[in-house]
Length: 192
Image (spheres, one colour):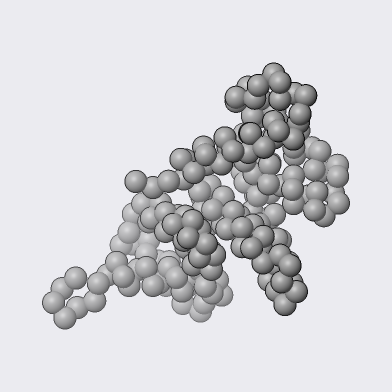
């Protein structure tokens, strides 16, 4: 920052927050051009990192803003899509039971499901979205879809630490795999 000047990184951070907050912002194209001109593709990693930090602090809205900004700047970026889908899911789960939040819950469920679906289309070998899609489909009584995505999840995670004794208790096996996947996800999306 120059003496008496404006910190450009803070300006960029605020521009990203505005982009994430209002995807219909009239000057979004100019903001995106500016950010892409003066920042490298590392900006996506930084935004995803900030989104992840906010997610871990249960700051759902802030997390959502960073991941959406990353998606606007880098459409199709896997970490941004997964982060956005995950924060939408965690946010709506935190609101369940609050009758005055039904519209927000519906929107977040739809966004989460849509982005998990984009992820499996974009990267069919990425196991974690199949797991979450299974719950989304199950909660909507889409049993055939639930079975299909969980079958694919199990195929992708087969041999990833499930014990032979777990075959007798599928719920225990699934719970253990969920822990392992959550740990792998945490490590894969962590920014240093």
